[in-house]
Amino acid sequence: MSFAISTPPNTGRRPMPAEVVKSVDRALHILQHIADSGGTIGLSRLASEACLPLPTVHRIVRSLLAHDYVRQVPSRQYALGPRLVRLGEAASGTLGSWALPQLRALVEVTGETASMAMFNNDDVVYLAEAPSSHSMRTSTPIGRRALPHATAVGKALLAQCSDDQVRALLGRTGLPVLTSNTVVTTEALISELVVIRRSGYAVDHEEEELGACCVAVAVPETPMRVAISVAGPSTRVTAARVPQLAATLQRAASHLGAEVHRGQGVNAYPEP
Image: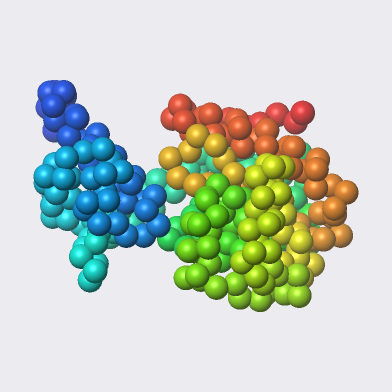
C-alpha cells in the first residue's frame, strides 16, 4: 500500500460416462487435500484423509504428476504442481474482473480506495482495485505481493486458517517489522486473529505503512481465499469509522461471495 496524489479526475464430444466423472471428482478431491495439507503430504496420509484406497490415490497422483498438476518433493511427498499456477492466475483475473463493480460501489459509499486480494503461497496478492476520488488516497498496484501479518486483507485471510496453519506460515515467512505498529510476535498475532474471527473483520492500524489504515473482511463462498478492503489515510480511516466501514464491507462481501458462487459475476452493491 502506498499513497498517491492526483488531480480529480470445443471438441464437440458429448459428456463422458458417470464413472469418468467420478474419477475427475476424486482427482479434484485429492488436489484440495494437498492444498489443505500445509504444503506437502505423503500418499498414505493423502489416502486416509481422502477416504480412498491407496492404489486408487497412487494412480490418480501419477496422472496428476504426468500433467504437472502435482510435483514430488525430495522427501518423496507430494505438493501442488506448476501447471496450477497458470490456472490460478486465470481464475484470479476473473475474480478481479467480477469484483470491480462491487469495489467501485464501495468507493461510492465509503469514499476510500477499495481492493481485493487473495492468498498465493505464503503471500497476499492484490487482484483488483477501485481508487478513491480524493486527491490524497492509498494505492496498491495490481499483482503486488505482501506478507499477511501486517495487512488487513492478510489478517482477514489468516483468520480463516487454523492456529497451527498460521504458525506454520509464520515459521516460513517470519514477521518482518515494517512500522512501529507492526505485530512482531506469533502469539500476539494469534490473539488478534481470535478477535478477528469474533468480529468478522480485520484492521491494519498503520502496520504496513505509517499514515495509512485499512479495514478488510474475507469473502465467503469463493473457490479461493479472497478478501476485500477499504483503505485510506489515517486522518480519514479513523477508529471511530472502523465499525461502519466493516459493516459495509461485510454486506458487500456477502453479496460478492454469493455472485461468485453462482458464477453470475458481480452487480454493484447499493448504498445501505
